[in-house]
Image 1 (tube, rainbow, N blue to C red):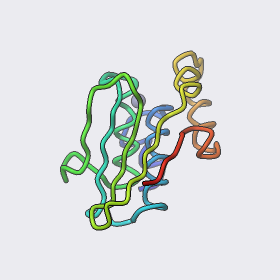
Image 2: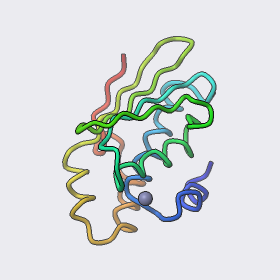
Image 3: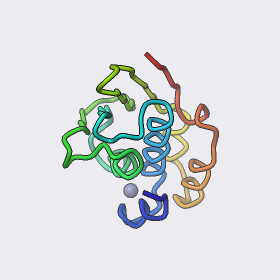
Image 4: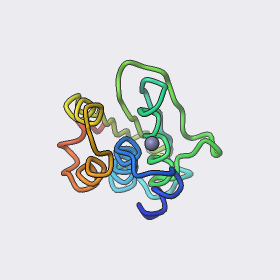
Length: 130
Ligand SMILES: [Zn+2]
């Protein structure tokens, strides 16, 4: 769905939601647009605001709790792992520490979300394709 709809779904324009939205868009570009051929495993500290990333992922790539192709693991890390089921190709996206620190110390969530929405993807994540 469009970003505006993701913001409405989530309830606010959160920086972590926006990070998840960007991650999901990257997954459909690099792996597949078919949400039934994609799985996502998210390793994050399982609490807000980090967990807001889950709504962004669901809204952009269609890996959802309802389809059981979105899994969440409590972790000190911040990694989003996508896999195309039919080919086993994987995309691993680790959020850069600098970005997490910036969000946690940020004054304005809206401005940070705009920055994250527009930033080059490799400024936000370390990406590995396997
Ligand atoms: Zn949020």
